[in-house]
Image 1 (spheres, rainbow, N blue to C red):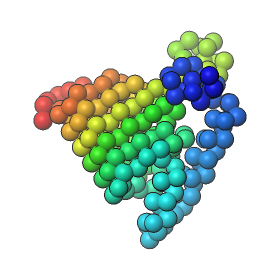
Image 2: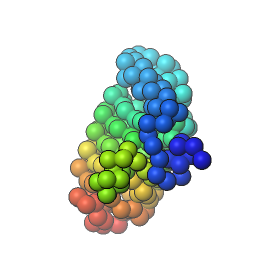
Image 3: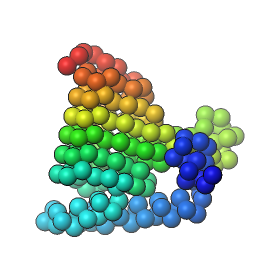
Image 4: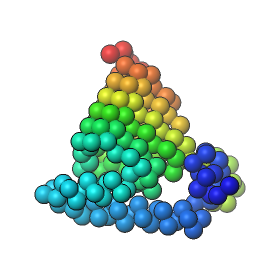
Length: 183
């Protein structure tokens, strides 16, 4: 099994693997080109994002700056809006549904590291996943951790830290993020 296959399967992997390093370099190249593009170049921006993302639905709008690890592990639906300063660490699959609104400075992490310090020092990493349902609104500055699903139509309050899955049709806020009411 390659390091890439291990990463995508959620197994321990080595990020210094040459294939993964080349993929990250390509992701950085594409995000640099995207972030340097002008608002008057929507077709150019779309071409770059289509090359960067694993899939990107129609009518997606992403405000630069945008950062990610690989890009190719991000699968997003139609009518996605990502505001300024979003970071997605996509060493695992990140799935974003249709009609999702992501506020400024949101961070989405499919990546995580071993708890044991000796294991962490060895360079081993883990890829997880993040799944965001349809019509979700994530408020500015929220952090979405690995192995989290956010259900359809839910709202995540600004500044929340989501470490556990959130069901559909709720408003959830806080650190750690918790459901405060149904929609």
